[in-house]
Every structure is written in C-alpha cells, then in structure tokens.
Length: 260
Ligand SMILES: [Zn+2]
Image (cartoon, rainbow, N blue to C red):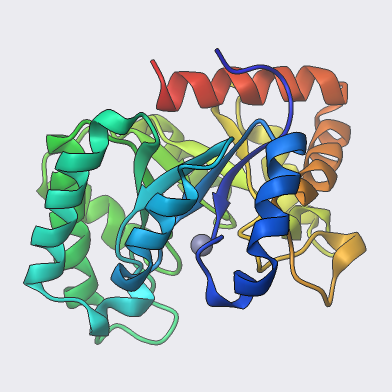
C-alpha cells in the first residue's frame, strides 16, 4: 500500500550525466521518496534501469523514446518484448516508457516514430502495462494513431504536459493521467498553472524529468527526484488544497494507475 509522500513518475536516473552521483541519489531517494519511476529513453539504458529498480523505492519503465529511434531496429522491439516477459513478475517494472511522437524537428521522422509507437502500444496492451507518453507538436497524429489501432481508452501518463486545454480534455477522455514538472513553477507559466487547476484530482501526477527541467529555485542546475516537492507545493497552492491532501491524492493516483 502506498502512503502519502513524494512520488516522481518520470526520472532519468540511468542518464550518464548522473553516473558519479547515482549512489548518493539512490540513498537520498530511499529515505525521502515514496516512489520514483525510472524511465528509459534508449535501449542502451534498459539493463541499467532494471538494476536501479532493485533499489528501495525505485521502479522501472522500459521503452524507446522518439529522439533515439535512429539507434533502434526491429530487433530492439523483440528484445523489449523479451524483457517485459521476463521482468513483469518482478513487481518493479510498472510501465512502458518513455514513448511517443515528437514533431519538434519536422515531420519527416514522424512515420518512423509512428511505427515504433504502434509496436510499443501493442506491447503495452499485450502485457497490460500503462505507458509513459512523450508527445510534442504531434497530438493530432497521436490521437489518429489510437483511432487506427481502435483504442478508445489508454492507461498511462502524459509526461511534462504542456499542450492546450482541448488536448488535455481529449487525453483525459481516453483515461490518461496528466503529469506536471518543473516548468509549472516558472513565473511565466500562467497557462500551465491554469491547466493544473483544470485537471481532475484523480488524474494528477507529478514528476521531475531528472536531470532536466529543474523547478524555479534550482534553475540553471539539474533536477533531482526530491525536487518534486517544490512542484507539488506550487500545484497545491494553485488548487487551493493542503500539501498533505495533495500527497494523499498522488499516492492514491499512483496506486490506481500502477497497482490496481
Ligand atoms: Zn523524459
């Protein structure tokens, strides 16, 4: 049973920028965090993510991020399927992530991204795992792909959500959770804070995207999972609820998405 506290649904602890500090990070997380979902971006991180997930409070998400598909092949997908099969019973592997569509650099790559996303959504369905989604400038293509796959609902999280309220509504209607990170705390992020009030309590999650997107007080530095506290304080203030009430809600949401 998960208890109220700090939950980070999206951290890249296998990132090589954290290598020298990783033992300290794991130690501090074991005492200060309730849970951290360590997301993989590329195949070369999968084993390391699984190793990290053996530590207290650590959990794993495995997947292929749209930025790193030049490193991926059909064999990567077969390997992912084998790992999901062998690790699913461990209780530490909670999701496929991070996966999605990113049109930031133009549409040429998008067909390739769609092929990998389609395959990974099929794996998520096969193993009954939620997905951690990275979608940017490609939401219509994402919704179109779900339609093509005849998926009227989807279990998972929109990580670092920053799209419009209308897209937020569509994501909520599919059953997705909405996760907020460091930029929520930036002075100029008024639109994002409005959105943070709009999401129903039972669909909220929070994250750091460690080591990126530090909250306001840490700008210019790297983020760490425990900095999710600053993001939660901002979120609690926006929603006019106590920090403890938000911690309770996030614990319930984590439980219903990943455990029940
Ligand atoms: Zn990420």
